[in-house]
Image 1 (cartoon, rainbow, N blue to C red):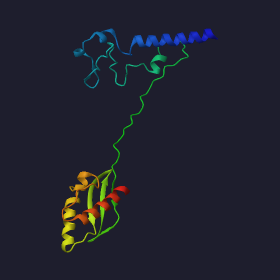
Image 2: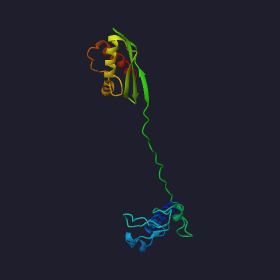
Image 3: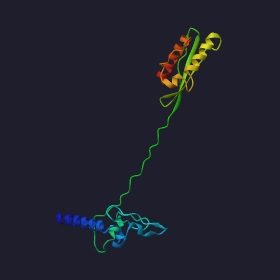
Image 4: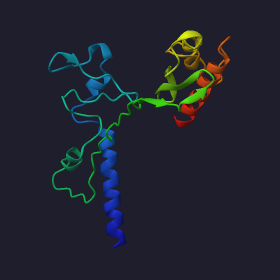
Length: 194
């Protein structure tokens, strides 16, 4: 039993060595010695593939490869039986990873009451980054309306201080301390929810 196993293993190994030494089907000494500039032309008008570092030129036939296939190993010598077969390997399929989709969402802070009225802040986030902020329900009339406009101009919008600093750590608007404080409180609550 051991002798049979050794004979089969030796036969398979010698067949593999012969396949490797012989090279791909269709290559000859003349093709191996030919300079790259004089490479044979493949049907269709293009030059045959370049030489590999080992000096072996792959076959010029379309679809042929430098590696022997199972059918090439099996059809070497008629009448010789081999129990081991050479398996053709296939490359694993390539997996592509696309960039994660960035989700845009809106978060609204609570209504904060202060000396001149009440307000709340709504922020728009793209992923975890704030891209827009706005104050809602702010007083519109009189001095309170002017303070609200100043706060809105400084903090809100896509180019406001909220987007620039990405936090509720904002500088207080001069002359609008109560409105600024209420805005920051609602903003911080919205950030905590986000």
